[in-house]
Image (cartoon, rainbow, N blue to C red; front, side, top):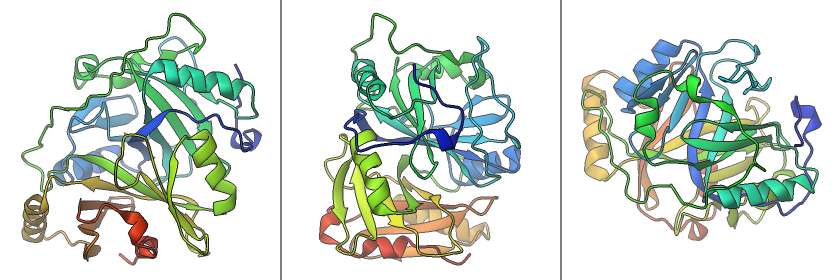
Length: 341
């Protein structure tokens, strides 16, 4: 098994590993104060507690075993699974930074097939872990952003976590062990949960925006390794939209080429989807009554949305999509650029 221990030893070539990626599943982020972050993502943003780890909270409204992981770890000290296997890498960049993106894949057979293709390339798998409800492979992209590609092993993930210690279920995984489960466990009809006390009632994390050093450098990774399809690329090659196999319309990630000295590379924000415009209007009304200001709003042909900032200053968007065909909206990525609080 090809494993690496740091970002600098994880190069990528234009190799057609192509993980069988369906969609963006979750964002695992580092937070400064875990309880304060939980109060925001649960009490304001409306994501339900799924599991409480030794250093992390896991939240989901039913779409998957978690939409967000709030990692309160303040150092590079390794996190160790139940069998003693190290399950983390030294990628801590401080509060408000990304630990990793989680990408849902079709099933374990397809995930292992991609792993085997990676073994014959220079794509380095950093970790291979069994998380109780899923089996996962981890690797860095050329900018040092960490990615998880996982296949679920059950739809009954609430019975595994049930609000308890979610870190206690992790152990090592050998992708070459047999047999490999061919069942597709992703749920086409999730049982949605609503946090009634929350000011906002979103369905799920839906997409993300990230800044990259060079689109020419990163697109081969997202296409040929991450297995996403290029939906649209700006004529000046300054940004691009990509999506997984689960999407018939819309996108999973927008890559914007870095051209701002004040903007760091990598994760900028995630967008969470609401059921309809009435839900969004109700959320805006509740936020206003609570004295919580939005930091940016959109109301145009493509979407209606508003942004908040979490306790560490990271933006999060709440949206309802109006025009899903983003290929017809050249220039829209410029609206996703940094904005003042």
